[in-house]
Amino acid sequence: MTRRTTVTRGLRSLSAGLREFYEAPYRRTLSRARRDEDDLFTVVVLAEALGVPNPASYYTVELLPLLADRVHEWHTRMGMERSPLDGVSCC
Image 1 (cartoon, rainbow, N blue to C red):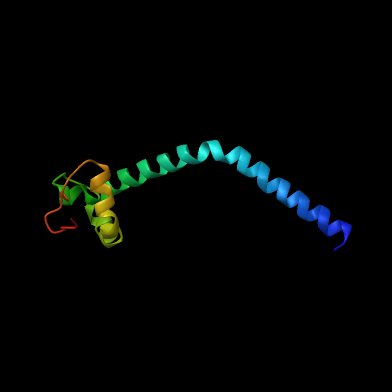
Image 2: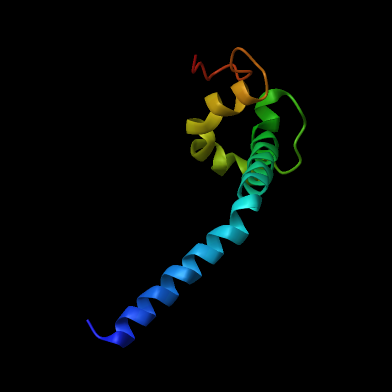
């Protein structure tokens, strides 16, 4: 190896270490914020199925199949023992 590749490799390693040092404290906060946004999105999409009038249900009905996999995670995180949806029994 040449001295140039050794220095380049060392600088890349230093850059990755500094990036991890600066990003690590915020990783948990950002993941919690993303989870909260996902939960709100799930409630908006499932609002009609939960009995809440949803003026945007015409547009959100196409998203129901995409959320079918995450219903179990969502309702357990919200503190519900069983799925609140009549047609979905995931537990």
